[in-house]
Image (cartoon, rainbow, N blue to C red; front, side, top):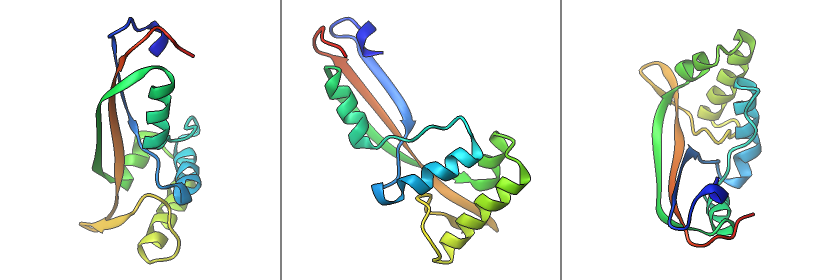
Length: 131
C-alpha cells in the first residue's frame, strides 16, 4: 500500500493486535478454528517495523480494547457447533486458571466475554523508497 502513496501521503491501518508472544500461537489457533481464512495477528512492534521499512513516519498509534461476547463473535462466522464447544471450553478453562489463551476471557451476565485488542496507525510517507 505504501508504494502507491505520493510523498506526504497518509496510510491508515486498523487491525487487531496480537497477544503477547507467549500466547500468540494459541490465540491464532483459536482465531483460525473460528475463521479458517485467518492467517495471523501482528504485534504493535511488527506493525511499527512494517511502517518503518516502508518509509512511513508514524503520526498516530492508538490501542483500544473492546469487550466482545464470545457467542456473538462465533456467530459472525457461523462457526460449527463442535468448534464453538471447543473454543468455549478453552476460554472457560482459562477463566478457571487452567491454561491461557491470549483472550483473557471473563464472565459477564452469565456469558463468556473477552477483550479484543485493536490497533490504529496512521503513517505519512516520507520518501519515494518502497519495498
